[in-house]
Image 1 (cartoon, rainbow, N blue to C red):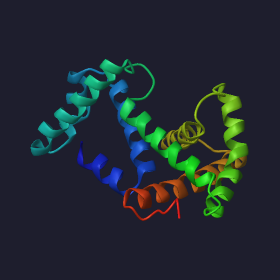
Image 2 (cartoon, helix red, strand yellow; image 1 turned 30 degrees about the vertical axis):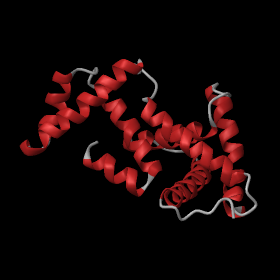
Image 3 (tube, rainbow, N blue to C red; image 1 turned 90 degrees about the horizontal axis):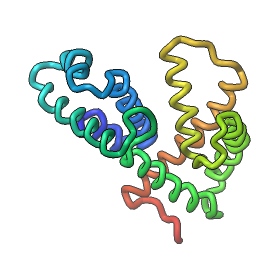
Length: 181
């Protein structure tokens, strides 16, 4: 795992997932070709970091090929993050011990439902919809495209919800979250 991914996975699981989706898209933008990655990405790193970056991107390319996600979709390692977060989300949402979490979820829920209806993916996991919205917002910002007030309001609710979930995930990972007591 590269250093950025490692740090993000330790610090904030939501940021890690968005970063990994960016890495998938970076590989696709370079046609999943090692030569293009070498010229367009790896060559920009200091010489001493290049072998590690070649290994990192080589491993991702192998996984993308083996899993059939070279054109679209997400690696299983990234799907597993959504699965783990969904399990935690379900536990938090069903527990009376976390009313602020439930409130954040229910505030974001109408926007999640609306997004799922708009994108035609009604069976998609709710958290995947949230992360797709977050990733889409990131892409809009990178392209300096305007964001409507309605979209900004939706993203505020979704971001707040995902931020709270990521914080609970971190606590759970460290053994500091008591769901059963």
